[in-house]
Amino acid sequence: MLSRTSSARQAVAAVARLARPQMRTFIAPTVSRRADFVQELYLKELKAYKPTPIKESDSVGQVATFSLPKTPKSPEEADLASSLKEYENMAVEVEGQEGADASAPAAVVEDWLVEEEEEEGAHH
Image (cartoon, rainbow, N blue to C red; front, side, top):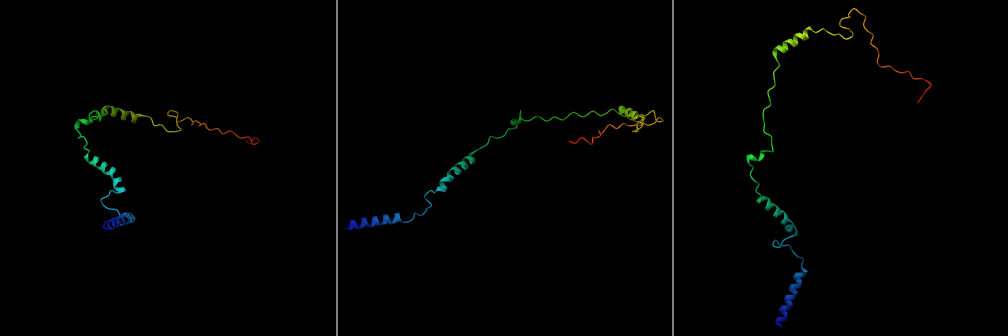
């Protein structure tokens, strides 16, 4: 009878354990902990990554070498003097006057815009 009572107690305890709501424990992995596995793997690989060191010869062929541009040629001083003298000797042109014919009457400027007269009988 003693064995029946102990087995009955064990059965009641097992049923009571199953009937109780499951409580989360810190030992069992949770769904969010399992989802963080990918993140942890990524972070581990990221921390382990070592980039190749940059050498000074890596830029050869990728970047053009800098060279100073040619210095511009300065204008000739004698040429400037002759150009200035030529400018001073030029005749002044005034609009509406012909250079040599200052005494002749001014030419009539023709109107280049000619408006056609519309016929009043024709409508669009």
